[in-house]
Image 1: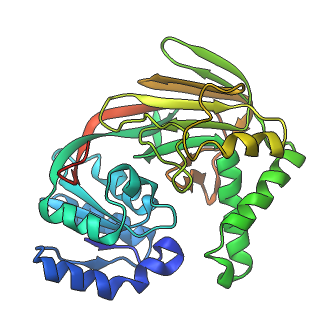
Image 2: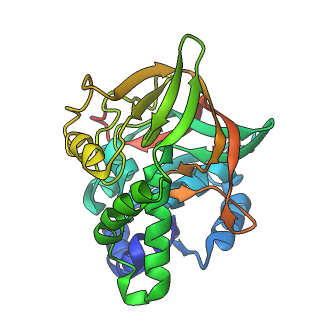
Image 3: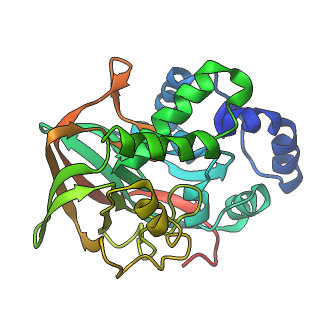
Length: 308
């Protein structure tokens, strides 16, 4: 088990003692290694992944996605498990392992399930991996705003709602959104200006929002939702309905499914994969075109025995 102590704005590290106690109480044969940085996490996955039957990520959605990315090149990757200790825990929710007790119960008595893994391909090269979601538009802007907010004062690291709310207003005022986008799949094309373009492999995004409520990580398909909005208020009206999935079918909301999509824009755009903005040289990667597609059944994950 690889514990990322910085996940959840530092909350994961605070739970290390309890995590060790719960693992021992269940008699789980897990060695717990605490990672020191993203580089150390990646190196540890590469060195340990080939020789272990099971590798468990204990951290946020990004921790899990980093582990998956490093395991994909292996000919015979180990099964993977997840203990969600992050800020959003959308992946844990999607796989029915939200909460420390339920995730450890799954490791003790769950079952293996082949899951699809998404990838972002640019110019024939894989530039990002996701288990849950990849998006363009307001999600990227909010992510970057939260980072800037946290960088100003460390005590603000755990606050996300306020800078996110303010960024929605700023992004529309500065015309960062909506984005002019062209989306093409095998059977359909969409062109317009969108506040959000969300490609989902799992159901939950942005702390439990059901923007693509029917997304299934085992069906070989990505679910796309495009949201048109020309002001903060019009966007927030739609966003308020995403908690229950009642936004679907409303004016300005486009949703359909495909094995893969090509996303392009004359203005350029950045992408966020499972909570992390794709970067190059420390700066957000600015793209004109990207292919977003699935690797069906690429990894086996431990899920609760009653997961469906």
